[in-house]
Amino acid sequence: MSSIVTGEAVVLELRPASFAARALGLLLDVLVNVVLLVLVLIGLAAAGPELDDAAARALALVSIVFCFVIIPVAVETLSRGLSLGKLAAGLRVVRDDGGAIRFRHAVIRGLTGFLEIYLTLGGLAIAVALFNDRSKRLGDILAGTYALRSRVPVEAAVPVFVPPRLRPWAAAADIGRIPDTTARQASQFIRQASRMSPLSRAGMANSIASELARHVAPPPPPGTTPDDYLAAVIAERRNRELTRLQHARRRNSATGERLDRLPFGS
Image (cartoon, rainbow, N blue to C red; front, side, top):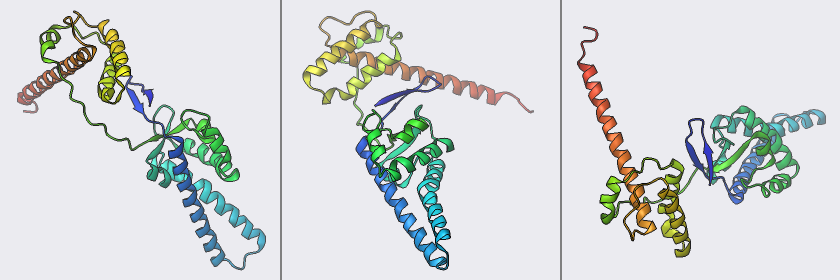
């Protein structure tokens, strides 16, 4: 998982594609391009049997560039980072900042790809991709792009509620100073806690609870476990946010009704 902070200060959690997934998508793309080249060459051979050797070689070279460079660049540009192979493997190419690629990114990837994929039989692409954390090939490094997983399994929602004995404390606690990053870390822990080993779970719960305690007052009742403390704080924070949004929606609705009753245009 990698985090991207947008210009609006929104944190996006993106999953870079693994080396195996990229290799599968690349293999499918190469297969499609080779088949396309074979069909084009067969068509040229059938359409112009009277061509001399120089013209035939020139047309063959143009066909290679057309199938291995122009077509991939056009497809990635129009689809914003997709291709048949990437679509089948559940991948999409994006910029390093998480945005959609543009024509210049696709051109750099396409020209470099011809060198590292076809002229070196994929050896250069594999060598470069094995030694960086996002499995980037040389074209990605030069273009400032990488491949991410566009199909991510949806995690089942984990119900979070305030433990009954902590409800009076949670209702009166000051939790408005909790940083968003700390709250997000606590929420992620709650979602993943059931898949963690007991020792790791206990250690992480203690660490996150200690961080939350710096921003929450007063302290919880004696005997509160870290797991219950995290659940109470996160659930109460969510409930207060939902209540705030509901009040804002009602205010906006009431304002709209008052504006509708004004005699505009009469």
